[in-house]
Image (tube, rainbow, N blue to C red; front, top):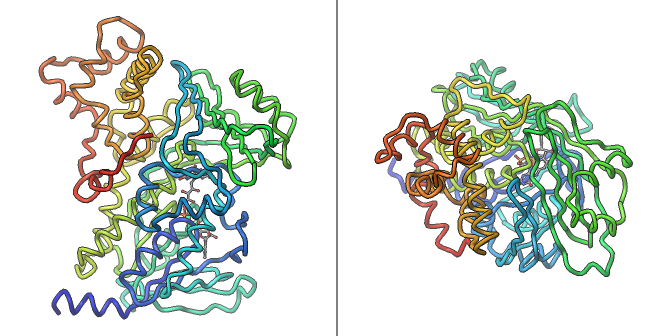
Length: 506
Ligand SMILES: Cc1cc2nc3c(=O)[nH]c(=O)nc-3n(C[C@H](O)[C@H](O)[C@H](O)COP(=O)(O)OP(=O)(O)OC[C@H]3O[C@@H](n4cnc5c(N)ncnc54)[C@H](O)[C@@H]3O)c2cc1C
């Protein structure tokens, strides 16, 4: 069959997405352009107004979309920021953000149009868009319990499900492509094993993180919304704090720690005490003005998990997975939804290229996604591994951990100094854009930059970095760097850079 004919055939087929979280919505939007019908099956009853729901217990906690995610979401849902602003999200364009780093305080102003909202409002705004797409149908209060496969189990041909309150009345729904986006609760490994597949051990970052979030009403006289964040100090087991504004004049404060030795408190009095003790003087002044709404709530997880399904040579056709079900992260770096957007984009690119026609399509998409999310996994692991008690467990050790940690220490120190002394934010912005998954870590870690960082001042940071760099020939520094850290070239190839022609000033 020629490509056009096969593509036309697909146009008559049905895709089924399990889960209506952020990844599910993004996947449905992408698939709607390539399949005749897209069914989204969700176990929750979807709320009729923006509100938290049981299937996404993380939605009480602050959620932000990183610039890379924003670019992709804006391509998939043009003008979604306006939707959020119309729904009452906090307009953060030109608002001040104070960031306390280990090397000093920086005042940043976000010049781009942007909205800060609760996770519930963000999901609501995106779902409104998805619900308007004529070939997408939501089927709610249905729990998927397993995969339906062809007789030889080489192809997934649908799912088994039951209505939430009717466990014993299982039904089947057929589909040509099934996409699991069940998040951290995904049971995909069990479902695959039930079909006789041997699933490779995932890579695990035993991060043992704890979040504790409290919501506050912001009094009307506080017209200037000053968000603030203070990085944790893992070496001294000091947690991180953050304060950000969302819709309806509400601010969310968060406390965070990793390593599992101590978790942020959820009892109101203890929470206030810890929030106060970790806050900087400016934040302390601000917090005094805020009026708590309800008690704080916690969220803990033992590990971040990166599945390696792409290694399964016999991965069944008709099955894909994306979002937290594929790879999840320590949320403090705000990567999860952006990574889901990157994966959805990789799926879109593959579908547009007509790759769906290739016999190994699904596995190739998984491989492509895996390459695309490598910087996110690496960066968060590098940062998490600074906490005592965090360990990486995987078939292949992570490359360049100690070197990158020392490099980022010296880089950040120099960048903050440059910003404070010369009002030059360029280095710091590069660092922010790397953590926003817009720039490759290689844009920060390279011979040119390293040469400028090494001033010979014998500071602690420089001495430690030189020790990690080890024996090197000064004229071939780039080769030494290439030995030490991953190349990330496949994460930022072809189409992706063109997305960033827009001004990514932050
Ligand atoms: C405390 C915390 C803070 C976070 N902060 C950020 C942040 O600032 N920025 C960011 O980008 N990310 C953040 N994240 C991560 C973010 O929440 C996830 O990356 C994102 O929600 C992933 O989307 P998903 O669709 O894969 O999973 P989810 O959003 O969790 O959605 C899964 C969906 O599947 C449904 N489901 C599950 N099982 C079944 C089943 N068997 N049948 C039918 N439906 C099912 C659930 O009901 C749910 O609707 C945070 C996470 C946590 C825990």
